[in-house]
Length: 276
Figure 1 (cartoon, rainbow, N blue to C red):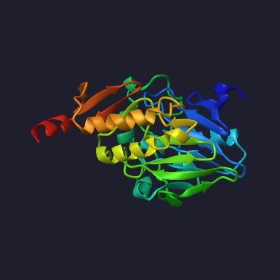
Figure 2 (figure 1 turned 90 degrees about the horizontal axis):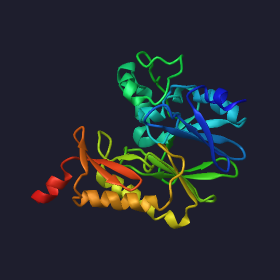
Figure 3 (figure 1 turned 30 degrees about the vertical axis):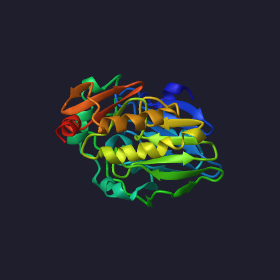
Figure 4 (figure 1 turned 135 degrees about the vertical axis):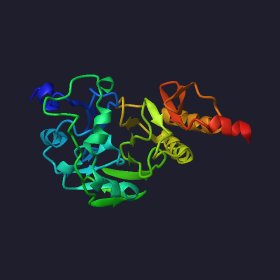
C-alpha cells in the first residue's frame, strides 16, 4: 500500500520508536497527533483525532492486533473517531463528556478556511459533520497500568490543560507520551478547562522524570520533544504565575513567547501581582 492510500488524503503516518506509530493530521492548524502503541498481545490508540478521516480503518491496516482507545482527555480534536471503537478508556474526571458528542454548530467553527493547511477529504463536510456520542468502558486514575503484553504504560493524571488530562509513561523503554500537557507549540493554560496552578504542578511533576527519559512525544505539532523542554515549560509557567509580562495579547488572553514553545495564560495575572 502506498502512503497516500494509507493516509486517506488526510493522515500522515510516521514511525516514532519501537512499535509506536504517529498518526498526524497535518492539514489543520492544530496538527493533531494520535499514537498507535503496540505490545506483544494488543495495542492502544492514544486518541482518535478530529474525526475527519476514518482512523479506525487506518489502524486496522497498520496492525492485526486488537486495539482499544485511550483518550488523553475529552477535547473535540482527540475524540473524533471514538464512536468507531468498542473499548475506550479515559480519566474519570472527563468520562461524562463523551456521551455528549460534538454538534456541527460547534465543530464547524474549527474548520474555517484560515484553520486549514490543506484540503479536506471530499467525504467530509464541515457544515454538517458531527462527532457522535461515545462511552467509556474503563475509567482511569493516576497510577493505573495498561498492559499490552510485553509493554506496560503507566497513567499519570496531569490536570491543568483539562481536568482529566493524562500522560502515558513507558518506563521500560524510557518513553513518555505527554499528550496535550506538553508539545512544541502553544500550551493552553487559559480557557474554560484550564487551571494555571494545576498545570504548573503537572509540568513540574513531569520535569522530575527528565533524567530517566530517552524520548518524549506530544499530541500537536511534532512527534518528538527534547526531554529537557519539560523543565523549560515548568519554569515558564512558574515565571508567568510570578508576574512575567506577556509578549502580546490575543483574543483576551496573554501570549508568552519562549524558545520552542509559547503559552496562552490568563490576561490579568501580571496586573494582579502588581496590585497585591
